[in-house]
Amino acid sequence: MRNMRVLLSVAALANYAVTVWHAYLAEKVNPALPAEEAVRIAVIAGTLTVAGLALLWTRRPKIGSLVLIAVFVVGLVIGSAEHFFVAGPNNVFDVGNGDWAMPFKISVWILLFLEVAGLSVAGRTLAARS
Image 1 (tube, one colour):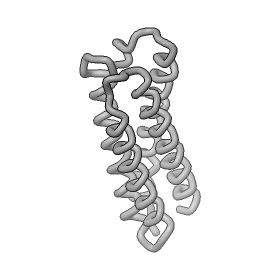
Image 2 (cartoon, rainbow, N blue to C red; image 1 turned 135 degrees about the horizontal axis):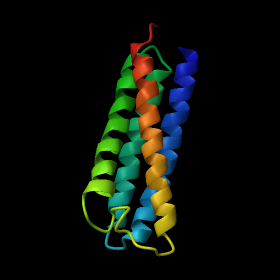
Image 3 (cartoon, rainbow, N blue to C red; image 1 turned 45 degrees about the horizontal axis):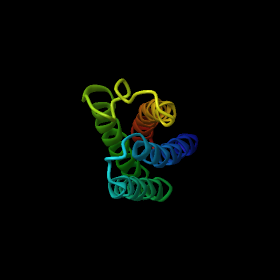
Image 4 (cartoon, helix red, strand yellow; image 1 turned 120 degrees about the vertical axis):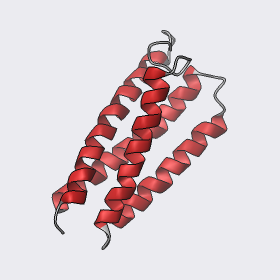
């Protein structure tokens, strides 16, 4: 169980770090995006990630796993819709070829990987015996 918690913690912290980088890149790619929105997303994601990690390493690892599952699911659903299915300036296929386009696309794919991996580990942590 301890190894799963370590792996989940690494996935959650990496996901948060890439989320902050991605929010910065999203503002560069789409200047119409208000900076306040990027900051708000980063603060909410950070708060939920820290809360989930705190619960994960206390006597409530199952609740911590559930909070982190929520973080990963929300990121995966909103990110997938925004960057793959909805046409617009944040779609990876419509973003163009500017200076910030390639780092933006890379951050989207890294987030996709981290969220799927995080969901997998969080689910296993939730299902594991204490």
